[in-house]
Amino acid sequence: MADEVDDEHFCDEVTEGFYDSPMGRRWINIVDTWDNLRHTFPVTGTNDIYLMMAFYNGDAYISQGREFTEEEYARGDRVCLVSDAFARREGLAVGDELPLALQYANYRRTADFQCGDHFL
Image 1 (spheres, rainbow, N blue to C red):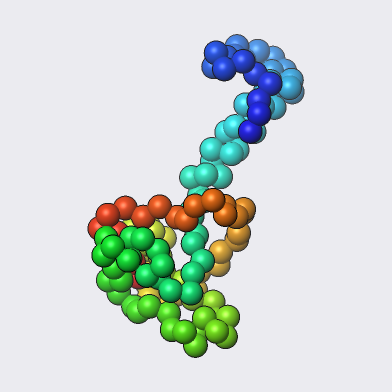
Image 2: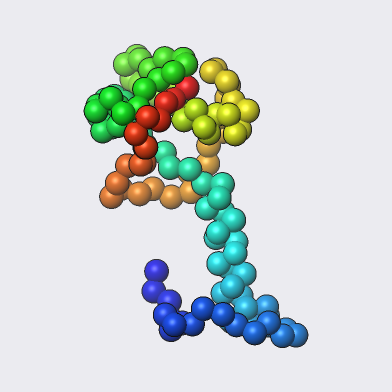
């Protein structure tokens, strides 16, 4: 996003009332955004996992559970695959409910999977 601050500007002196100033509020916004990004994960919607290059190329695979079915997709069932790393970090197992809040949609690219990723 466009920013009114010069590209060379990378620090500020924090004095009394700094966080009430426009620059202080900008820094608070940056910290809030950074914290939000730490808890945000990409989601790719598809009716066939093999339309995603990592699965198509064999770089990603399902290690537990199963692929969702055409019937589930046609009914609009709420099913998903998550990475093993995400599942371990969140304490999830196959069949657990996962509440997802959609923050924004990126129509330019899909989620980026790493070679060797595996999913539950």
